[in-house]
Length: 70
View 1 (cartoon, helix red, strand yellow):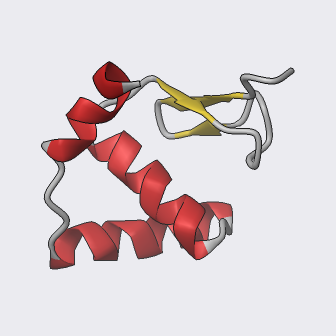
View 2 (cartoon, one colour):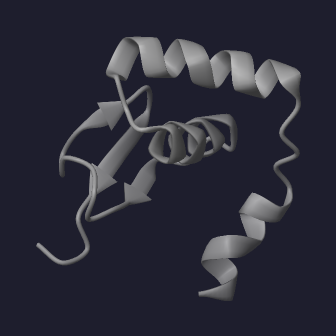
């Protein structure tokens, strides 16, 4: 788990991050929590986002959602 979370420690949200998150939300209509996490994943150049809350197989930019329980 630690190795999955360590890259997120490098992410330092600033006002521009929140503006990008608003643009991402306008495009995909996600919940506030989901859009902030997805935007951080986009900013960190992640290719896979594991979630059981978002639609499996969905793409947000270059980030693909995988449901780990499916």
